[in-house]
Image (cartoon, rainbow, N blue to C red; front, side, top):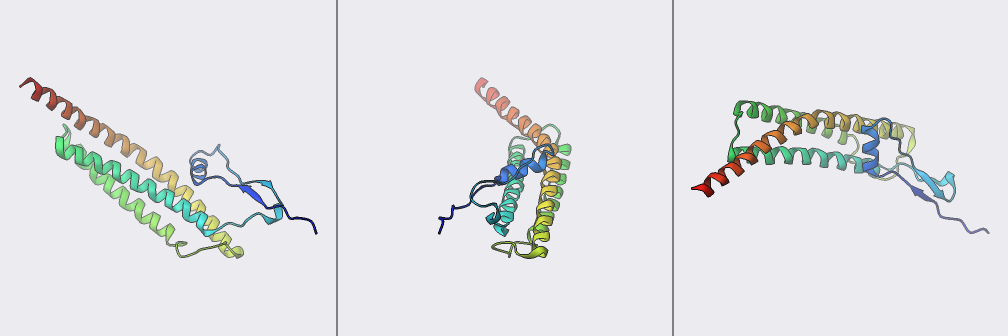
Length: 171
């Protein structure tokens, strides 16, 4: 009896999948490096959960960056308070909407584990993957502008810190 060679597959990372979703000209694929192609492992729900976790981390990072700016501005102020308050309200609405949309997608698979079996499960898994890709693109596109706005407010608050330190040193 011939010794069976183990199957070795290199799959794209979650990060690579997100980059591929953000840039249509980037394509990722799994590559069989040795063994039989017929034994390629099947899609698992855990792989979809990894994508879900990466997106959840994106949302949390965005929320944290906005929170840090709000704390800076609360402490040191800014010149355009009305605009800042409007930006905070809009960011809170957007984050709440994105969080709710994310939860709706995640709830469709978060209790599933193991190998995706059958055509119906595979269709659901592919659909959810595509939903995550669309969601991630929309999240990044929308929140990028918001983060730029908050960076401007943070820089203004940091300038106020520097200005107040200079004034204190002169006194």
